[in-house]
Length: 160
Image (cartoon, rainbow, N blue to C red; front, side):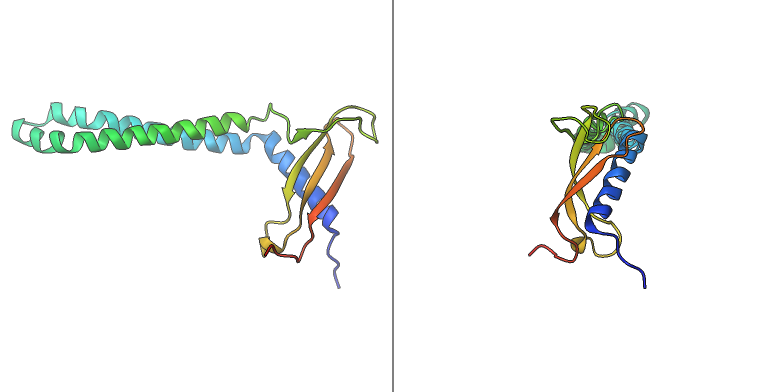
């Protein structure tokens, strides 16, 4: 029979995994990629009707360029706006920024004032609503392994 790790241990593992993902920059690179795709699509949607209207002969130019140009330009502006939102989100998730919020006081293990804390959802496999939630505090000092967790919702207690 296998035993489930305590909720605190699960939350600490998830907190360390979140911090590792934040430090790796993987989420930032993914968001920059999405921003680039939306930016290219937006630029194409804005410039394509102008190119088509220049290259096509007279009557076809009026049919294609005249009626569809406002739609393409509007969609292009919307795509550029979405790209901007992803760009801001990518910059906010920079690996240069620290994980979590600064906690006042010194680490009980190493004595350095480098404690950070953040709300962490429990496991992502199985039924997520049954996973524990809590606040995890980790020390950012290299070589220090200090971690604590305070469970705010125990595992197996789905919100009502």
